[in-house]
Amino acid sequence: MACAIVLVAVIAGAPFVLNEGFLRLATECLLLLTMAQMWNLLAGYAGLVSLGHQVFIAFGAYALFLTSGWLEVTPIWVLPVAPLVAGAVAAVIAFPLFRLRDAYFSIAMWVFAEIIGAFTMKSQEVGGTSGMPLATSKLIDFDWFEPTMFWLAGGLTLVTIAALYKMMTSSFGLGLMSVRDNDLAAMSVGVDVRHNRFIAFVLSAAGCGLAGALSFMGNLFIAPLAAFDVNWSVYMMFIVIIGGIGTLEGPILGVIIFFGLRELMTGPLGLSGGWYLVGLGIIAVVVMIVAPRGIWPALRDRLGVRLLDVHRAAPRPAGAAILPTVSERVTG
Amino acid sequence: MIWVETLINGALLGGLYALLGIGLALVFGVMRVVNIAHGEFMVLSAFCAVLLSNLFPQVSPLLMLIPVIALSFAVGWLYQAAIVNRVVTSPDPLSPLLLTFGVSVILRNVMVELFGADVRSLQVGELSRASLEIAGLNIGIMPLLTLVLAALLFMALQLVLRHTEFGRIVRATADRRDIVRLSGVKPDRVYNYVMGLSLALGAIGGVLLAVRSSFTPFSGAERLLIAFEVVVLGGLGSFWGALLGGIALGMAQLIGLKIDPNAGLLYAHLLFFIMLLIRPSGLVSSRA
Image 1 (spheres, each protein chain N blue to C red):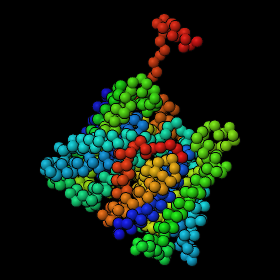
Image 2 (image 1 turned 135 degrees about the vertical axis):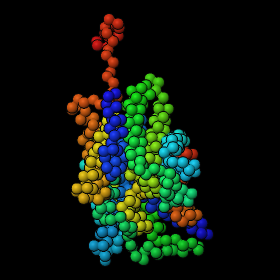
Image 3 (image 1 turned 90 degrees about the vertical axis):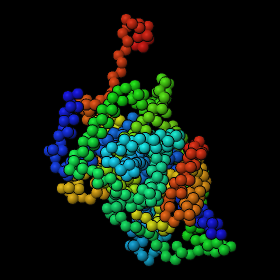
Image 4 (image 1 turned 135 degrees about the horizontal axis):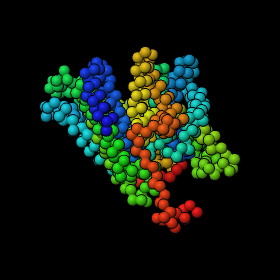
């Protein structure tokens, strides 16, 4: 609890200390962390790897740009539209996609993103290939724009992590994790696999929609090539894999490595963005081979640290006095 | 008449698409791994062919297929031995998927940095423009040769898998990886050969596609999606299914391009997605 108050205070105060460039970087960092947590919710907890998650980012962002333009209100007030639209799209396409398993699901998601991207480039109403600016950007108070963006991103990140922590320690989260670990065993104790996966998918899409809307709102401009870029999925995936899939702390560590490496390679080392992605890819592949669950779980086990752990100890065997016969049978 | 020509050209293009898919299907059938980097390896083989034909301008680019195929086989062997074999037995089915995706990102960006993001193509001179006229229909020689080559390769692959010692070992390994060890087969080594074969087949498709249309280092994703759609549409059971799937996609793409010249692969993707909606159970069939 004290930790949460400190974090809120840090996020509230940061804009008064940091300069504008650093604030932008921090905002980007936080938004990507939220997206990675959402991707992790789906891949790490529900066992569904999506290679087309950029489609939800794009749906959220386009929904924000269009509604804000129609209603002519400051984009911040129509932000709730973004997760609603992205979540609704996810709920609809879940029906055909959930018939597919593993790699089929992953690539079918990717094909879906490609189809929507191609249609977006053809629709002149949303700006076609060249994209469109944020129509209501003149309503924005630019003195407070960067700090507001940062507060929104920070608030979203904190709420996301807190909600995921709460969810993963609830019965829903336990059901989800049991499906990931052994779906047959989970079903046999009455966990509704499809239902759990559906909720995780819709929540994941909604979260990505909101983070995507914030991300493009910060740019004041949206174009299909940027919104439907498969690199969104690449970033989310690398952050989660490097940090630790299926943990809440993993993506935080992943984001730190992601941005640390980027600032190091494109800054002091003067390398291009391409080599940065190569470096990140090599780290991801090495981590996958050496520590398949990611860096955080390996560190945690070695150092014995627990931060946002949702792991539960197995219940102790019932005392001999209560269940003598069963206990005897088990031990004997 | 123009529509008949479009359909025929679509079918010929389909032969090429089937070639893209068959390597992916082979790896999936034998080791249950979808090699996401398959598209990038195809683009890499196309770059190799372009480099070789720049080095030896007097040799026909199509003859460059021979060294490129050999090279791709070696690369596939090493790729499997060094990387994929380490996760292929992982209890988590997502590991190979994530790993090969990581490899695809590495390859794509290495190609961007080494060769630049410019649009390239492989020039074969007269042959690419030569065409036959049959009953008033214009049919390109190159696409026709490609389809014939695809059919021949499929037949050869089927013969090898059905009737040779190697084929029996591969099929046995696909069925029971743990049991074949009792007969002295090393599954990992079989996988190495299969990945080599898969990338060699991919190289043929990649180079021939580079003759037909231009490519950039970013074309790998497009090629992977086509290959995947071919495999899923055709069903994993048979190679001839893949040929049919490829032909359906080729026709959908060319008909789409007739209706809307800058549609790209949209109509092929749409066909795939609609098939997914109406025939979900028939799509994922038994192993190869």
